[in-house]
Image 1 (cartoon, rainbow, N blue to C red):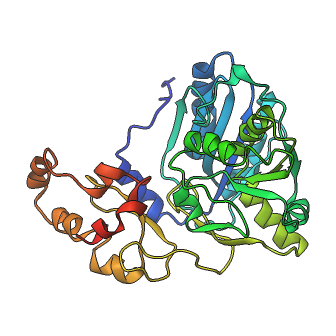
Image 2: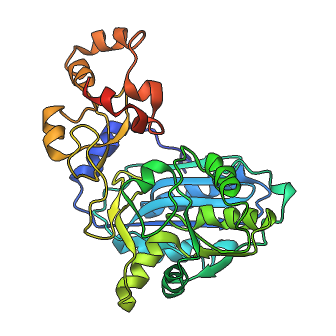
Image 3: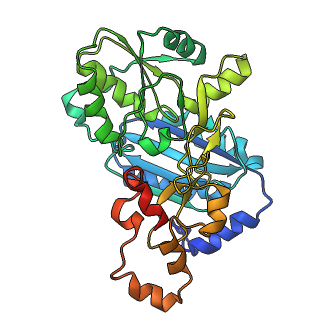
Amino acid sequence: MKKKRLYNRVNRDELRQRIAESKEERTTLSFYKYYHLLNPNLFRDYLYYEWSDYGVLGRIYVANEGINGQISVPSQQFEAFKKKMEEVLFLNGIRLNIAIEDDGKSFFKLAIKVRKKIVADGLEDDTFDVTNKGVHINAKEFNELTDDPETILIDMRNHYETEVGYFEGAILPDAVTFRELLPDVIQEYSDQKDKKVVMYCTGGIRCEKASAYFKHKGFENVFQLDGGIIEYARQAEKQGLNNKFKGKNFVFDERLGERISNEIVSNCHQCGEPSDTHVNCANDACHLLFIQCEKCKSKFENCCSAKCRDFTQLPEEEQKEKRKTEEFTGTKFGKGRYKAHKGGLLG
């Protein structure tokens, strides 16, 4: 019997083309679970061996503290996969956040990686009680709490996520990373620890520890949106609630966003026209994440600047040579710093 490989060996461009051309209906979902895993490496291999048979694609992080996954599954295999998933006892009954908008092209390969943490939060878990979390609230309760002008509503996502969509009245920290965001926000509101604090993120995972850390720092009334923006949108539509979310919900897959409301709350980083479409610069030596409208997409040929556009038109060998010395916006600043250098996108 041929031994199954526990990793992908096909070229990523070929995989991406396969998905782009596929007519197969797929369901995109995300999930997480904090759980003490004694051997994450063994668990990682088990997941790859078992789940790859169901056509699972996506990105899964496994650590001693649990699992965090964003995946897609062939729709006709979804129920069978769910049963297989629930054979792992601590995953039985886990919340599966199904994507709001889904064209089936969210992922093109399966990657399961062992990490130190399932979210890079920068926290020392042994210094506070991570189980003493904030109160989980549903969409209706969220609306009621945030109707109170005294409630502090905090977006626990990074700035490139909040730029294209957010809840009305939310505090939007200009943070590059989650680990940077937490201490900054706690410091800013350290004199308001008696107020109600409501926090939210994409699917809920970042708020699990963030709410516990806020309580550790002395905040008395901490709440977190159960299931995050994804579940809120689903409940709001199903129950006919006022949808307080404006714009797009940034997602960490090939789609880079799913629309929650019709408002466009951001602008093209190149011309300033209303746009909320995130793209990565087509120059792989740059790969900057930025917002681009259709007109600029055509003008710059999917690139963030004229420099990158012209670079992609060079022969491959010349590109390889120039990469050794050339510096691009993405290589200098990455997705975390483009806001401070918008002018450079046009150069």
